[in-house]
Image (tube, rainbow, N blue to C red):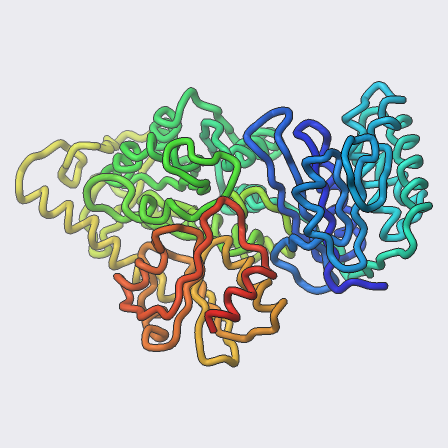
Length: 552
């Protein structure tokens, strides 16, 4: 039997190779030319916490994981208790028969078989892949090639253990679940990787960060590839150092980016204001997790929207944009890095743990990335803050025979400190001109995704929730118009106002309706229903489709 959407769920203790098993399964599906989406769920514990991965795949484009598993592999009793009720009809629940307690399904002795080898628990991930491979009818030779390629250490033991688990599973299933084949093999990348690649394509020179989940994987990825691409990657001592060093790099002409989550960005906010006053081109990744304070470090939410829109003290241009899919994150990070340089101001790429750390098959086109080079001053009378018609001054970088002065204090055109009311007003006006210039520019680029439908109502969402919405509508075969603003500040009111008098449903992941209130305040929307989720977990498309159906 063949499934239109096939989902593999693997769960166990931290340190048992759960995430690796999910990644290998995703790779198997991607190499068959299928579309893939992988979501990893893990507690903020190095060992002992419950981890699980959900990998959904289809011959058709897929933008979310499904929590109903066709194959669920549980390494321990806790995983069984958490996931056994998620088994899809005619699916297989495979559990560790060495665990104590009553469990239904196919018992496989993962633990006792693993004890025969030095690696022991590290083999569980290999076993999960082997059991799944047996269910989908993968040939043992193909499984062996996958094991050799994906698990680099202990190859002989891995192959032996995989063969045992594969044969045990094969002997206990009564049917194979076919998953089909696609037409094109696509890369599968995670969200922060897409952001990194987009920024690199747009000329990124330096990345600064202090590790903070869920932005940390961006630091890890860039650090791992820094030498290959000629990139400087600095792990500074704290977030305050991060943003101030980044502004210093921008002063020297380097395209610079920083990354963090809510608590780390709170420490950066004074520096963010410094970038506003000095007119420093600086891109900040703000990857949201539940707050306030430490919150829930390894889970997802959209509760920092208001924080991002108003970050910093004083009045200055803050560009805020949020990608809706992993593929879109690639293009938007490139575009936003260009915009902060064109308009010499700080910007925020606002995303969430769900997008940052989930993986998805993508089709990326490098030739669609257009780099905007800033205008460099060529004369002999350089003024850093020359008051041009559009508010954008020409740049000049050291070394130079002319004085280049960036100033955190209010200043005149030369960057000289002033408290003169004339210059205070004039520099305010200069910075405000850039807001109007940006709005004019934005009317020439895509600022809102509008996916037209047949139903006389609109679903409005943003960020990673877009992925869940699109999949939920596809699952339920509902066809409203989906409206997804890419830019949140300046909000493209000229596009959004077309829908304000229609029937609108907003879907977001905050408890206080931050996104819906933004639309009410800025665009004057009347909103029929706000569908909210704020438990740290992303929407499951099946559950969300029911909520949308009820709202309609």
